[in-house]
Image 1 (cartoon, rainbow, N blue to C red):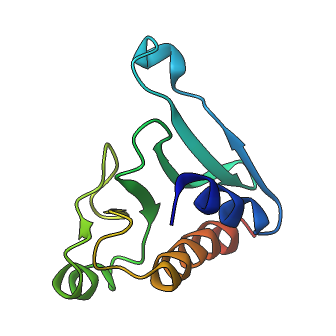
Image 2: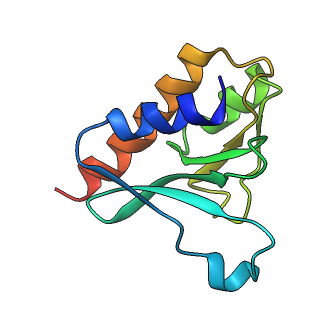
Length: 113
């Protein structure tokens, strides 16, 4: 999966918006693209280096995911209790990647209700 396919998938989820809120902190060195549902983040990654995607995750599922996939690791700049990082195009299929993003979306969406 490439960055545009991934972006299109995220934007296909209901009520999703995107923004680059951290540009002033990076001083132009990188651009973090963030996806929101109900004004709360559920996914983000460096758009210039699509090698690491950070998403929300059920804390109970994290150990099994980390054990099963080499592509799953500690989050990039996120709370290790609620966020994981995924490396696309590794041992995680596109379908599994989309499934985990959908779950992240649902965690945030359901929490906001």
